[in-house]
Image (cartoon, rainbow, N blue to C red):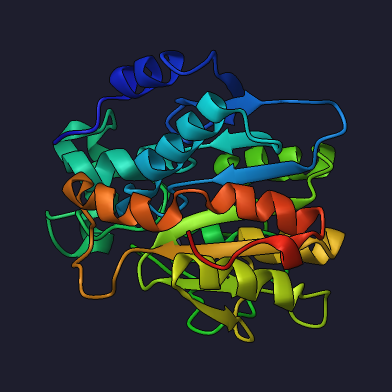
Length: 283
Ligand SMILES: [Zn+2]
């Protein structure tokens, strides 16, 4: 199914009125949904679809957000369901389904070495947003210094408008935790270098999902890396979906993934309130 921006925005309005946190390279407003049960609630930022082909994380986060609204969870949430809107459009629709000029089409075709963009991860500038944050920028394993479908760190930290939009949120949001959803592999990455890891919280969260908790010694420039570096608070990268599923994970696979994640934000709330010893491990 092609990605239609207007339909995406309409689907958000059916939940609540989104706020715009910035614009993509192609000038599409990046929407954010908010849920605020009480002024003193723990604050969490949730980000989906940082990587283009991982668009399954947008409907997943939205489904969890809808649940959370319905039963009145205790966390205060900011949800950016799809950060890399241009990239998702490219991955889902192909070159002709993105409003770009011939020059950019040729640039992208040359980089991709194919007319099939379904495995594309970067934004429309061929920068990997999750390597573009100012946290050990350019020092990660496999980082590239030139445009590519994935792995290019950008010309400088925060060179991309999508990166800057989330950085602004993180600077002013006073979040207790940040969770970025990716696919795939059923893993939860935590920590950044020597900063506070919150290992027990990360492991309890991973355990609940049935995922493997992992430290990321060679990671740099990521959204989670930046948040952990700046705050020493809990930052998680959650890789949803079995490794057996091929990229990109289609929306038909949403239900079993959602079932694993159902209730996980309640657990997160308890972890942030440090009452996790009272929580049963699995539903
Ligand atoms: Zn990813």
